[in-house]
Image (cartoon, rainbow, N blue to C red; front, side, top):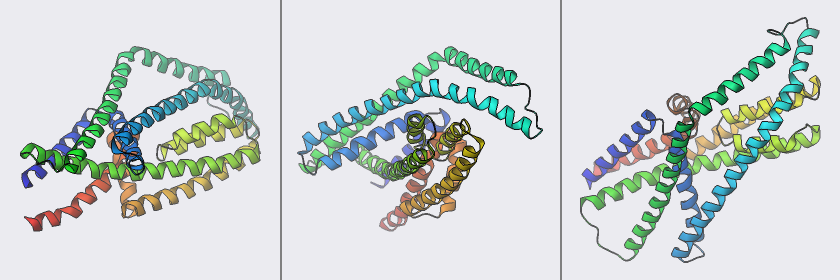
Length: 331
């Protein structure tokens, strides 16, 4: 059993290095999220349904929720294509006029700025066209990671049935699979905690912003709320991106409205920072500075996905170190 545990640690380490080296952040997140939804739904349903019925119902619920989130993403993209250019076309002349009123000059004319923006858009469009094969491959890899999560969930159910029937354990391979499953269980537990925190923050942010938008009557409220909910799942970066959209929408009204919105968003960001740090620190029983340091390292290693996964990795390492003295004593 000791050797099986050691090999399970090395296997997790190899997977972690491979995920960073081959840039498998999107695939890793897709697999973790899929398993999280499947496992959580199954545990809830198994309290009121037979286990087999709970298994297939959880799988059906996962497919339905996947379609819903895909639809939300499509709606967001469609709204972005129409709303963002509208915002820019209104904001750019006002920025130019505001700069002129204070005796400042914009870097180049308004037409030059528009030309730069259009050039950047065309550049990205061309890059997407030339890398369509890479994008297709990444989508395929994400689908494979989701399939792996589903198959792992089904295998965990079969193992649970085998334990319930008191079937004898096999040799070294079964011991290794048991230890590896324990490593995965700890990691997924941390992911479940941080994902719940992000959902709570997204719900809090949407509720506060909905009230603010209704009071201030800012335009494009539907688009801003959808963008806020989807982007708020991404720690820090998503909140700043949605805030930039809200501030741009406010500036289409008046400078006074933009100033009020800026002050409101600064206060909201401070509140979210405190709430996130407190919830993450309490949920993982770790100091806030460790969480923030992990976010910095995670972003450097895996980008946006690293921001989401950093607290999860910290939680996993803490749990493994907690178990290490017991293992040493047992040995």
